[in-house]
Amino acid sequence: MNLIEIIKLQIIKTSDINKKIRLLKELGGMLWANNVGIYNLNSLEREVIEDVARDYTPQIGSQYKKKKNNVFVITIGYMSGGHTRLMENLANMLDNKCDLIITGNASVTLKKRLEKYFNEIFEIPVYNDTNINELYKLSANLERYENIILNIHPDDIASVIAAGLAKKNINTYVHFVNHADHVFSFGPTVADVWYQISQFGAKLDQLRELSGKTTFLGIPIAINDDHLSNNMISTNDEVKCIITAGSANKYKPHKGYSLIKKIPEILYQFPEASIIVVGTNILFCYWWWGTFLKFRKRIKFYKALNHSEYLLLMQNADIYLDSYPIPGGTAFVEQFFLGKKCAGYISPQQGYTPLENIKCDITSSELNKINNVDIIEKIKYVHSFDNVKNRFLSAINKQVMTTINWDYYYKWTGDINFFKLEKIREIPLYLLLECVKENSSLKCIISQYKFITIISLIKNFIRLYVSKLKGK
Image (cartoon, rainbow, N blue to C red; front, side, top):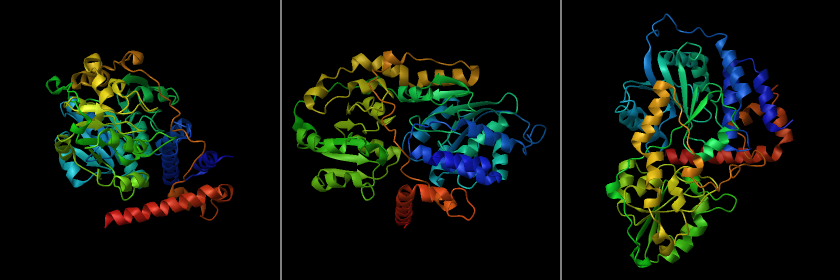
């Protein structure tokens, strides 16, 4: 029996519902972090929803009877990146006539920002600490709404269970915004509508065994033709600033694909240029260390910037360079429509924007060949706020789905197995601690998977130590 099957069996055998949910969350988290080609746990997802439902009384006829229209559910909110901004844009499309429930956490500063988009914001902490009573509370709140819009982390099984319970109330629809569409996720069994943002995700969706319908959404971008530029790079020396932005893991080399390996070549092509990397803490991202030490006078790192600070910094950029091997979902197109010369390398993970068609070798001659006119209309169809809004409202208000001719808008050369691993490389700390408990049937993991156990312990303790350092 392999590692995943051992954990599945333990979940099935566990009678304590709180522990069952926590074990399932940890298994989901492990599959999220270790892509071994498993993109759903639908049978367990259904089973645990039914287990919880046996002791749950729907709140029909109580204080929750009055129906409201729309509620978003988010696990953790972020000041930077595209995840939380996507949700804010969708709320804006509903004229902000919606509420928000946070199941994990969000900073005080972020909550203040979110108040501009939502009528009411509730915090029901079911993500980190499994508590069946809090989960019932979440479900009771969700029952008040016609549309439940899940914008959650892939391992947020508690929100999925609560949505599943709320669906037992008539006229409740669950909408799942699949923003982390390249990895495993809970949710396929409860979603009536599954929103797709990329061709890469749509291809993986065929492996998820979705219960509901799929509809193309796309990532909304503010588009202004007035800023578009076809400025030529007359000499390499005129390029002074190249900026790239994205979460640190997007730059971690994988299967030989690495932006970091290409940095020396880029700096050679543009001898007067410096590179600014936004979203990476160089202290903890070892994959950058060698290149940084070699070119430390020409590379600068910002571990975090809020969106306004980021846009201010971008005013200095001569070239915006997309993250790689994991591409950006928002920034690449956003900077294009702010008039920046955009560039990038084609990754096996692709199909997020028609703008990927301009990616080429980063040289002035290649960049000058790019003809923006050829792709403008395709980009507008996929990304313009009005088009995304029309698709979103059609699904939310009319249950009308949108299909897209992927081949027309994207030139697929990708590989959905790009991130697939042969085996699990790390076991979550919670599962490791369960392994050492007396009478635990997970004890066999230690004896059967000694090497993975040792590596996982080392990684988890390093992570705890680093987290402690960051907190100081």
